[in-house]
Length: 146
Ligand code: CA2
Picture (cartoon, rainbow, N blue to C red):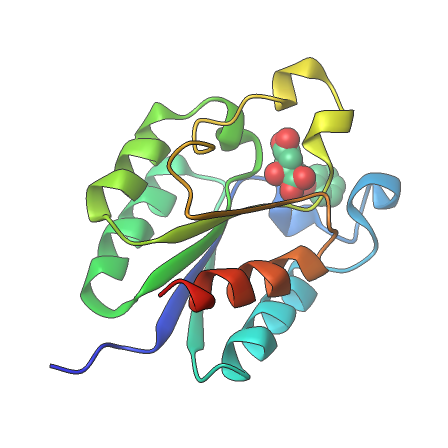
């Protein structure tokens, strides 16, 4: 069987608020912009993207499980779950797909509680503090390793 040329893009809690508040930290682009930037970067490399955003951990975990069927990699910004969720880590390691962890802001220049990531040692690629263009960088770095 030929490999699917598809990436799953996962955005976690509160990222639906992008572009509406905190522009000094997250910029002025919206979630729709993030999804377009990611899809354009993927398309240039012959990949399409299925995008999911949810404020509910279980919805994210179900989407990650479903990616086993038809995706070759995952680009994920887990939002605040980065710093709290063993369950999200277990979902990502459980499906075994290579994944890129993205953070729009430079979490290492923010509060101490944002410095730890439950994904840091299992992510294939990490892009931190590069703004929303970091999603495009993540696609390119991830695809280069697939
Ligand atoms: O820098 C990132 O991308 C984060 O993953 C964003 C999370 C934060 O908890 C992480 O520490 C770093 C928060 C996403 C919330 O996004 C908002 C966007 C606009 C307004 C309010 C929240």
